[in-house]
Length: 505
Image (cartoon, rainbow, N blue to C red; front, side, top):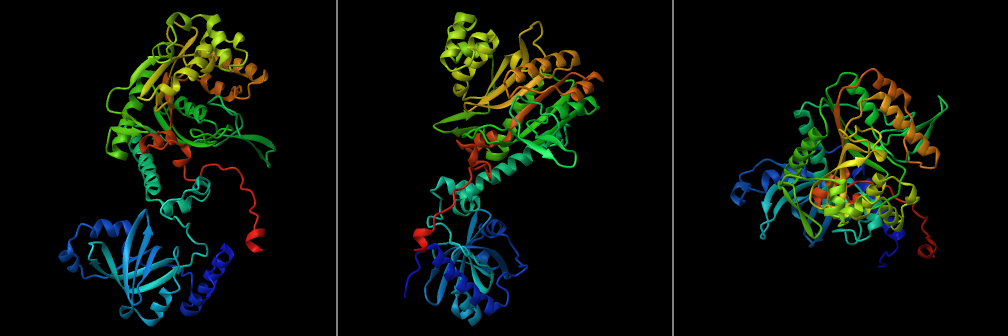
């Protein structure tokens, strides 16, 4: 007998089996199936029981799943069903099934979906098993599982065909279960603090709320350009102006930027605002929230991160940007404030037009280059230059630094927070500066949003606000070095057409 070797031949073999299944059952893809347990429920309920207790379970159990292993021993078959990141073994005997069902079992391939009904047992090795009395065919996989289905080795396939990755690696499945648990726990925490969850537009007439290049689309009926949201900030502040005391949104943002292990153009943030609060309150909020989420998702407050570990239990460190340049970046203190030295240094690390930048901007660029990647333990960095913070109150008594922090963990920025600027006259001046910067070629500078300033002119109370990167927090709590490993379907470059000429020759 010829052994099929190409993907086309393998598919044809499976299609032939599918036709036989259709002829036998009359329905190769049934509409519905009844089960008593999901596989996770099956394990949770019956795994703790010993052999005697299993024998006492007299009810018939039915489960379904994808066949991921199959051992045909002539008159008996052992197989494993997969669902929800777990596997359950089924034991089939020829004399316990009808002739039709036994024939069906020999048309089953790895990857097919079946349901099994039967009673509980343990094998000689102690594995919890369902002894089949009935099987039903549910769906044929026309394409085979990857040969190394226990873990895909091709990174491109892992991300592009995530469903195969989930089938192939239980650890991957667990990461996304943890992500879901994190988001649910985040909502619980914010609700308990009295924050109201809201939804704001994802298409904006004017992009704003962050310095980033937006994605542009077009509304045909109105014949206007629209911008995918880069941040929800300006709409959430409108709600504070409107009288809400505390609001938050778990939002999807879009920024037309490059791809990296820490950047995906489409990403998730949790942004919140609280009237009557300031930067210090936002520090307390985030420190408590992250500690809570670490405990809820992992059960631990000391977690691995690459070759080191991160301590979420101790109070988070607090440094000004200038202090961090000296203590972490190891710049001599006199040099940090020396404008000429900082111009030369920043030019050497690739900052364009460094000789035209203010001392605050130069310190900011030096911080990004020297300090960020070294901030492994949770650290709040405060006192940013006003030039990079157009929506933030000035530090009291200062004209050059603002009441802003960024939270760094694992060498990357995790959150950004302000004592929010609520002076509409000052706000308009800063947006006009941003607009001029944009006209000079900075595509990431903010637009002037007159409607937002008008809202502020109706009176905005003092407020604290923050934005937390959900994807990066999942990275940290699950010890994943790439953001693509915590986003189910990360953006991928278009796939090149396959050349099937050799295969079909």
